[in-house]
Length: 482
Ligand SMILES: Cc1cc2nc3c(=O)[nH]c(=O)nc-3n(C[C@H](O)[C@H](O)[C@H](O)COP(=O)(O)OP(=O)(O)OC[C@H]3O[C@@H](n4cnc5c(N)ncnc54)[C@H](O)[C@@H]3O)c2cc1C
Ligand code: SF4
Image (cartoon, rainbow, N blue to C red; front, top):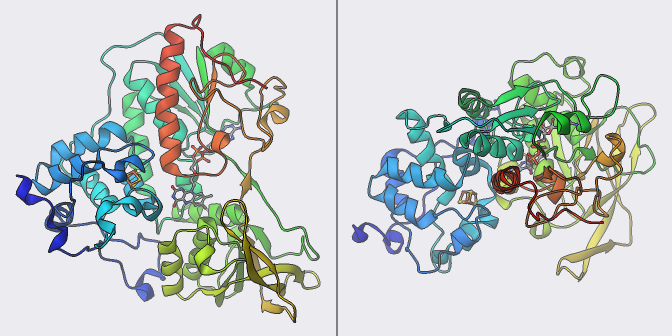
């Protein structure tokens, strides 16, 4: 069957069809259509089956990519699904939203001369095809165990950990302050990248598997909340996967004017609307971009999600203000191109200096910048350009400047929970254990704002560590130290 592979020499790269910009800007449906069977097989057959698969090396989950590409090319689709799902708890989600250009596909060997294999699209196809054929079933435990694990946070890290522990028979309870599972998969990432039924489908499987969800349950020290100490008494181990939610803001004249919103408030309102929820701050226009001149500040993926959401809400104009240039944007280039196609205007090399307006914001004043010397990380610094700045009309400003962790030791009255200088929870890397015995952590609350695929990896690895510790709590497992 080897002759099926190495087709990259004659067969060009084809991405899944993308809906035309004018059509997709009218709704929140995903913009990429899935591969049909023949196209998936053809594209998988482009893999060169190289000796050292750099795609796998650069996939945070170490997916066996060349193997499942070969199985797909050979039409052994159930085997491809079994292999793909052996290393990834949510392959259909990663296939949709991993920044493949920075991970697997960006390191595909045939990229040097030919375009990479469309790994993400094939991964998505394999799992969607498996769902259609009824091959995706809950990973039921072979035997029940009387040990229980409490997981705080139903984002990808918490869910991946829950799935793996439940499959080993643990009694798993997941606590989340939100009313739905998914974390940022549900309330951060817009539906045009990840439709909500994809997350809900996984939630249903986890429930069938026997994972118990306690939603609308905030863990903390305030009145009416469940404390971490209570959870530690209730469960044999606890996994913290609470993500990072404190928005960075731009402290400058005019901050606090009406019409300025943090990115996640804006995206959460829009995502809730996708679920059909009534959102008062949207209904009264505060978080609705319809008919407004919108300025989004920032250049990461969150900023791209905001500009593209504003387009879909019917904004009068959408402008992205970013302090570096296109080549130096932290966001995925594919997302920038999608935003450009949808009519977003980019002001590169502009730093906001003030929000203008009396009671409501009416404009953003920005200073023009130029690129300077690379810093220690190799990234070019920016320095102010002499001369007049620019003023951009704005009825609504969305700040997408990144996220910091909430300070959990204080919020949770847990002074012994050690954090890093950045406020993330410190763990011992070999055991995923925090400074509190039996309390583990992973995902964004340990890494800082990162990626879904890394959260899944942490959840899976932490599950292994918890399993080992619960089995032998007296063993010499490392705690995070000051
Ligand atoms: C707008 C946006 C777009 C993104 N787009 C992408 C993308 O395209 N691709 C990608 O790979 N990554 C993307 N990311 C990053 C990705 O979403 C995160 O890295 C990932 O979700 C982190 O997973 P997590 O499980 O650690 O945390 P989260 O997904 O943040 O989940 C944490 C959960 O913990 C709950 N929680 C927090 N505190 C408490 C508490 N005290 N009590 C109870 N529950 C609590 C929260 O309600 C939440 O449900 C994006 C992020 C944002 C903000
Ligand atoms: S999980 Fe992400 S990085 Fe890994 S193969 Fe899939 S799309 Fe690529």
